Length: 310
Image 1 (cartoon, rainbow, N blue to C red):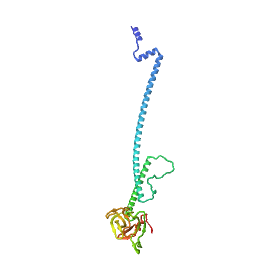
Image 2: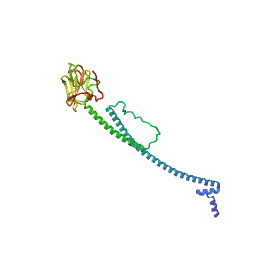
Image 3: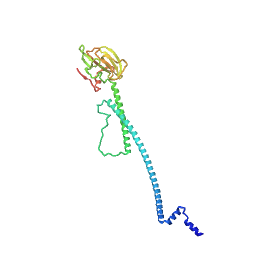
Image 4: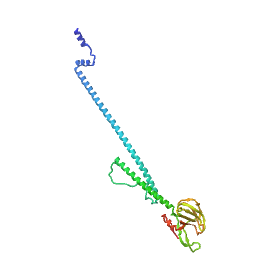
């Protein structure tokens, strides 16, 4: 019976994987060795793959961290750039304001054309080398420029106020010619009377004119008289409110009415030859505190002094 059991065990087919490998090893030792070698290679490869996978995961995590840090650095840099751009915008606005103020002062100061040109860039230059500017240095330069702009703006504002006050003072004084592009034909003081001869005291100065030429106010003021005066013909008188009164005589037509506010350079009449006159001209007088004075001392202040002929 034991012999049958052993015989049956020999002929029984192996069921498990280990049993089949052992059976094959008994039958085919070379194949079994190959299987064992292949199994070792597979196990080794699996281990290598596992190690590589872990290393790749580590690298991926490191790359993601670096990308996050780079994104944060970019965001910080962009915020700094935006802040610098805002400061630059403020400086550009200040520069535009200073240029506009400079142009006004150039006109108010009657500076020569081209002496101060605020529309053209300022010529600059210099030798190298050129280097990159650190952010901190750029910030310091912008701060310094802001202070310079602020100081320049204050100085120009003070200058503008002074020029404005000077212009107001000039406009309140009879310092302009009563007619444009003319010349003086008869001066102030003693002269021979042009109509009947003999000596005469001429209270004003005469300007050459044609009938209809614009007669201009020589300063700001209010029309205090507009009508006919004996010997003067059609007359306009302007009270400048500071003790000065100016008179414009022999006009062909009067444009200003009593109470009208007039500005320096505004037309107040048309030239003519009314009254005691030998021809078209503008007779101009200046009265200071009720006393007639020589207008030439005021006209000489304009820089456009009328010439004298005859």
